[in-house]
Length: 365
Ligand code: DAH
Image 1 (cartoon, helix red, strand yellow):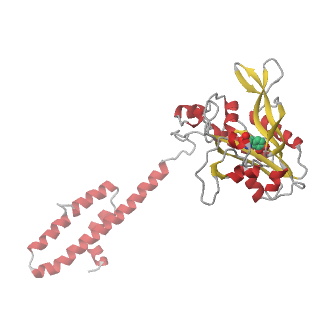
Image 2 (cartoon, rainbow, N blue to C red; image 1 turned 90 degrees about the horizontal axis):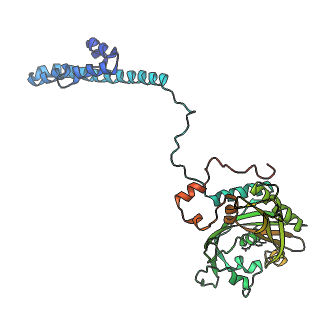
Image 3 (cartoon, rainbow, N blue to C red; image 1 turned 120 degrees about the vertical axis):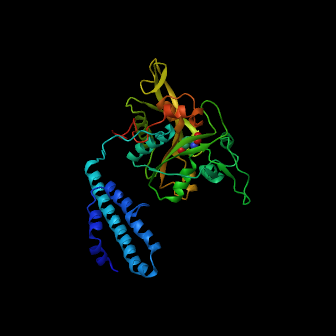
């Protein structure tokens, strides 16, 4: 028996299904026909009382009826579902302009914030960001930087050493970011302009020192570079970073094995409401000088150690504590909580991830 025959034979049944007005009506029809006490279910039950001949004649008709009704109900349900969906789409609205629920967004650590600010400021001056490994060998950390084996500066760095390697290589946690100078000069052709922010390590701990801390290294290698370039670059950086124009720097002669001449750089500050604020007149009654970084002209021996000709290439370098920059700009007076992971501290001093409140159009903004 085929479907076309069934549909003419049971036209009334099927048109009732096809015209069901709602999902609820359709369900009522389904229960009335196919449910436990349904009419078709009852018909199926009569098969049990028939003679084999009757069953052979009636059975296929009744099964075909049940099949046709089942299919018709499924078709109608699909159609009604679609109508219901269209109705929902027509009436429901999604307001894309509503604010996102705030959740728990976390915050940007002041050290990460300052690193971003440094990258932004120096990018405006044409500097790229370079990186190097925190586990260094003593050649990159000391020897190539003109700090020979017996040099007292090695002792001064309170270095964390690893057990000696079989090949005799001494591995250590880098004590400063200066080895990135070496790696950059060995891997790149001059002219070079980079900053290298990152973690550094020394066995030291008090209110202003933690065994892990952060530095940013600066390096410029080019032809004809002199101290004037260094001074201008540092002044431009410090003014952009502290967001004040009335900042003066003082270059004090100093010594670092990897620079000659070397200068420590002091920044002028003034006392404002019991706080030291960078800027103002350092020679006035409320003023003073504070050391913020070490710098100098890259020592010719360091340039030669990296395979470059110091008669052709000169440069300047500087190294600065990032944590201290953060403390000076954002007013923390103890370094240790920077790395305690206390949520209250992070909430107080952290920065919103998507809405940086300070700086920075960078230099010249
Ligand atoms: N590496 C030095 C330190 O950790 C800082 C420093 C001084 C870096 C002078 C330099 C520099 O690049 O020229 O104390």
